[in-house]
Image (cartoon, rainbow, N blue to C red):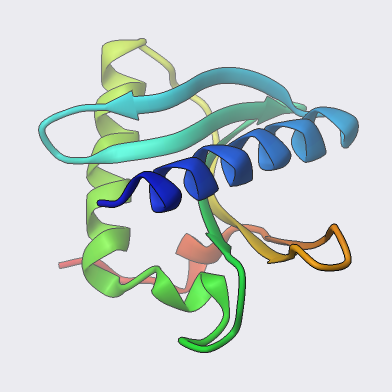
Length: 125
């Protein structure tokens, strides 16, 4: 992965963390990794644990950022979330969210979209 993509991803993750904090979420972990995969942000709001996948793009040339979360990526996120819950002995309601960030560098603006509980429509075999 190129340095520019890494910088873009880190910038998006920081923007997402700031957005979540400003909306009452407590950040519990960043870039949690296991053999199964990685989760960008793990947060809590009220009694719900939120596993957040952050996708950042500078154009819609290849579609909206959230469209990059494939079924295969979702399976990895779910497996990693379950590992986090077991490792930390957490027995709580949880969900998977996506933070989609579309940056407009010229206008120095970001369109941030929070797509909550995307896993509720999934059936993983």
